[in-house]
Length: 612
Ligand code: ADP
Ligand code: MG
Image 1 (cartoon, rainbow, N blue to C red):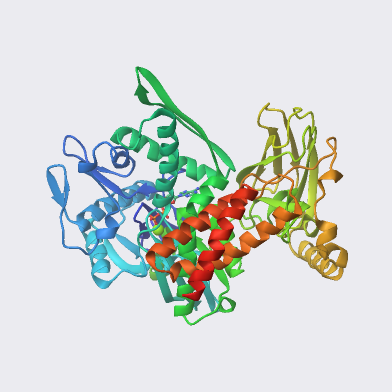
Image 2: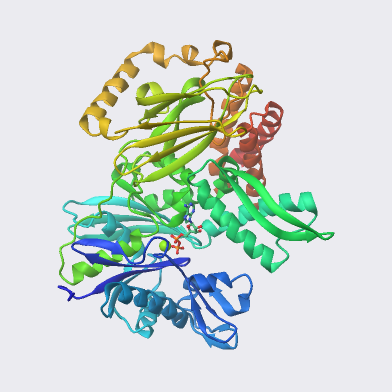
């Protein structure tokens, strides 16, 4: 079929992954089927001297590092040669190999030649780096019709028909780099107002932290350091990255690698459970750094959060739920994740290409869930333990279909029944959300509190919710299907109901009073008990008022201590960081003795730092 318009593809030439997209019938489409649209930005030479790109190159990365190169984007613009086996290449040449591969994929898909492209670069790229990118395109046989900034592309993907001025914050957390930009969109023109970032922070760091944790544990058990052998190191790295990705959708995941090592003639396997909460503790300090960059970028643009209309999440690592949670908490602004964060930069580049070739382009539209979905558990509501904590499983604005799960625990010894009340809404207090259904998992094993129950939600494109609760120890399971779980309250009716409840809440002293809200364990009986408390976010253990107070104090100290990291001298900052982490994990595990110990130390250090 002859193209009506000139073919101009959009290319996201990423540090970790690259993607190519094209606008068809006014909408951007990413080229490549499921799982094939993302090309790892890795180039290698095989044993015979032939070139490898993408997955095959990635497969030999750990085994033949001398013949493989990754993250070449970091070296664009440098005058250097990268040895690959017996040959040498410039960074432009290596990037050209990636671009060539993407074009071949596009030509095979479109069944016509691809000669022109829009290529994206980070907003902080200097002129030499942009020029090197242009040269790479030419080496790949492409005419580079325009080089655009990645945040600009993201804004175009979200807002292809801009008819009013809007200011957006683009938060891009990829594999090896973090960027935050403030952009202004007006009449189809996107302007970057300020940009900040950290060129050495991304998902790779999360992988490394998780790898070290897992390998340390293995070493403790078996006396073998898996990081020492290139093969087991590379296998473990792949395995932890996959596990990390699963933790974005599951509260707990199993990491299994068979025959990873040998000791005294016996094969050793890795088989351990990873909890999202543990992973979040590891990466929290790094995410805190990104939040500092966000603040700086807002200041540099001379803006406040009130001037920003929306936040766009870009880059694969923004799938980590803690990213949205922290950002939402810090900015109090609506987050958009509905365009696939891995693909949105390439889509925006394609939109730019289409605009250049004179096409009309409409916004990227996807089905999203307008409300969050979750279950009612025991947990914190306005800082107090309450049986009405909303444990969110599926976040508002998630693209459909989506599956998410988390693990909760029973709250009392001998609890026989776990009642699952399913709610939708955005309030941490379920009484201010809408109930959409309920079911009970009965016949639980007669064990102490802390019996783990996994709850899994699948929301399909028609708004039908499948909810399953499983007692992990026994496999005992109960499920329900709720039709129209999201449509029923969609739009105005739902908003009105929420407003009404919010007003009712504000007017009701009883709802606001902490005393009436505080959770009394004695009120629970083993037949009827509601579950629980999430393992990753909050904890189910009953709490004494003294501990609750201590935890309040600890949380306040953590809040005060965090910003001091950026102003303290190096060794103080390190000590502070360690103390903050130690206290946070003591809080998470509700360990009174440990909270006390770390809290006193932290308070002293804060006092000293504030005084300095
Ligand atoms: P870049 O822009 O650097 O090329 P990407 O935007 O493609 O990078 O992001 C790649 C990173 O995203 C990798 O570290 C990868 O592990 C991470 N990632 C991808 N999917 C997920 C997920 N579901 N949860 C958490 N991290 C993810
Ligand atoms: Mg990127």
